[in-house]
Amino acid sequence: MIVWLNGACGAGKTAVARELAELLPGGVLFDPGRIAGELRAILPRKRLEEVGDHQELPVWRRLVVETAAALHDEVGGTLVAPMTLLRQEYRDEIFGGLAARRVPVCHVLLHTGETILRRPAAPSGGGTAPAGASRDRSAEYRRALSWLREDAYTVDTSALTPRQTAERVARAVLAGAGACDIVQTPAPTAQTVAAGVLLFDERGRVLLVDPTYKPGWEFPGGVVEPGEPPARAGMREVAEELGLRLDTEPRLLVVDWEPPVPPGHGGLRLLFDGGVLTGSAARGMLLPGAELRGWRFVTEREAAGLLPPVRRNRLHWALRARERGTALNLEAGVPVGE
Image (cartoon, rainbow, N blue to C red; front, top):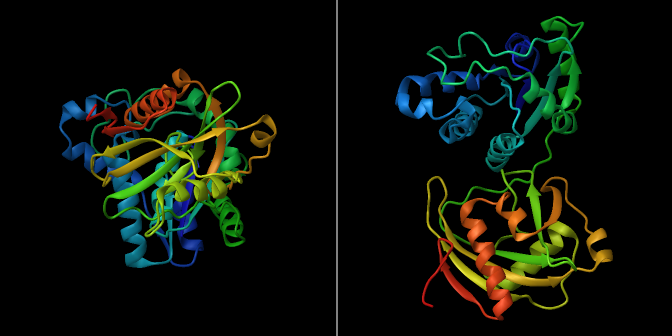
């Protein structure tokens, strides 16, 4: 297990983590900030100047997952990681990656009402901070509190010493508090085939879902299992994710070849037309908390602000195919063979 101590910068997370590692069985302090320090020593200055914070570096987020998983395999026990995570999409990427590697995560928020929210003068792990790292993050922390309180077990540290805080956290963790119930989606090791289903409301808006285990919005759907027909896979995923059972197999709109972009392996992505949901059907949707945290109907323009470029293009051409009553063959979101 990994206990992730979240909270404002300057809230004493590292001091609590040292105490907590002594209280938990097989406790080991794992400081993700040290990975940031190494990256600052390795990456070209130009790349560092392109980001305002080391957490914006995809390589940092990947290395945190891989290092934590490898360390967990090596030493067993409980890793204690003190690190501020204020962006929900980064939480999804890191915690989801750990869950996919079968490393359970316990999320704890250390909250102090009077904390001065600031960045440390010297970054953890040594080195020089990237451009913009000295910015005040108090407003960012306040904005994040709404989702942090829902996702993490909160401990008010205002009147507690680091040891007292650690003791309270240890009791809570050992009792099961803060456990993140995230779907354990294994990371693919080769190209995959995935089937998505577009569902519409009576105003023609398309349904998107918000996964807990990876950043960004998605179409309902998932990976096609070996020997499973893709259309049936889409129907199965819609039933599992949303509690909706489609009466007939959906019509194919696009086949899109997604090129491998490390660390992803790419593969074929199919989008099907699941038809229009009535208002009562939409209101009856049930979300599995371990997999999806929310859903919404959006226009194509609104979807463009939620989806990454490849899925945005895939949706665009799927909607055009739906209008034309045809199916389109895409490569990396671009039609071919027309």
